Every structure is written in C-alpha cells, then in structure tokens.
Length: 89
Image (cartoon, rainbow, N blue to C red; front, side):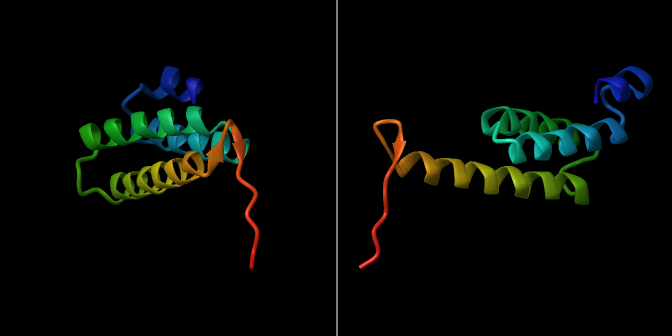
C-alpha cells in the first residue's frame, strides 16, 4: 500500500483498493483493531474521492458495518477478558 501511495498518490483509486485489501489481510491475521481502523479510513477516503454511491464505497461501508457488528458481539461475549464457554442443552 505504501508503494502505491508513493507512486500513485494517497487518493488514487488503486491505492484505496490496496488499503481495502490490506484491511482484509489484517482481519484474517487476527489484527481486528488495525483492520477496523484501516477500513474506516478507507471508507472515509472512498466517500471523499469516489462518492457515497460508488460501488466500491458501498462495498467498503457494508464490510465496515459487518466488522463493527461482529466486534461488538464478540466483545459482549467475553467475560473477564476470556470468551464465555457456551453449553448446548
């Protein structure tokens, strides 16, 4: 992503795509907070550069919404810093 920023500029659509892809990579590696922060930045930049109705903007917004929802649910299931153990009846 940094190479694209240098070569194309921070606001170039391909740089924003790299930012989006890096957020997905970080999420898959368990770096959830970093991924959320980067995706939020990506959404803001895409809204500014591409507009609120562009398909890439809408896709990133939907992803961010999904990740925030997942993060809130996951946090609410933790007790004392550890996940709750669920038992099926």
